[in-house]
Length: 103
Figure 1 (cartoon, helix red, strand yellow):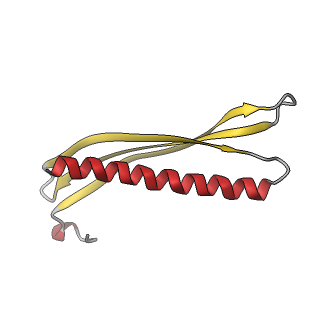
Figure 2 (cartoon, one colour; figure 1 turned 60 degrees about the horizontal axis):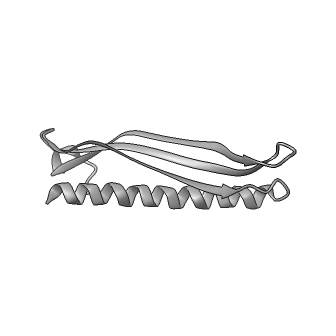
């Protein structure tokens, strides 16, 4: 890994990184009970000379979490933990695709 393009043997480009949150369920009063977090990344890998190694690919993932209106701070921590796990899993999926393409 290097920060200088001229020293790199390959370049990973993150072409898109979209995050979102949708309401998954509500109670009879209309208050949110569950949210669905989603994230989509689009990436490609090329040589330093810009020859494609891995064509543009997209990986996406969704995870639900419970929202407690009586414990907003706890729900925010849970959202952050779910988002962090989601991002780690997305990176792992992308790395597996890159490794498979390099074979």
